Length: 175
Image (cartoon, rainbow, N blue to C red; front, side, top):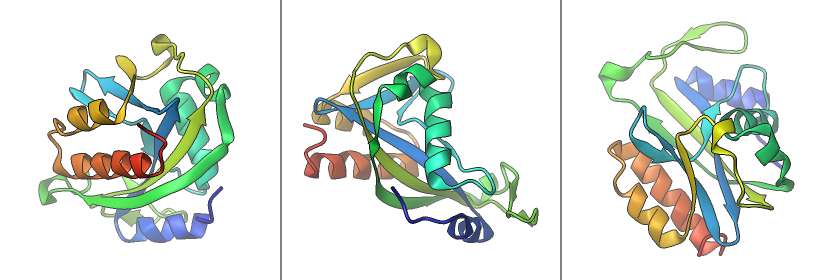
């Protein structure tokens, strides 16, 4: 699926960015968007890449944690592709909000996140919200996904989400 090595991920950590995988999951021309009441935010499922972990393993682990193993088992894992990479730097007062270490345990000042956005096709739109880490999950068409994304209060997250949805539209994955 991807040619991003563990060494490349560790090199990203050394620059102060925590590698993250983001799931852009699509089915029948719609993208799966998830809502978290805690953050009052619609988003795509995502999570950090652990030390010594490769992108594929991190992606499947995080998607199972976020969306439930049953749902991920109904996805076409052979369809996974790296859609884009992007990074977001925190405001200075948010530096070091989480611990960040290199693969050999060296402590690094965390200044942001480095996103690896991975697309995957689902064979079904049936998702059991009780098995997810979200309060709500909805399949959205392009227009709805763009409208909801424009309401995101975090500028970097909004920028990256808009880029993801626009790119998926260009690839005819979302209509």
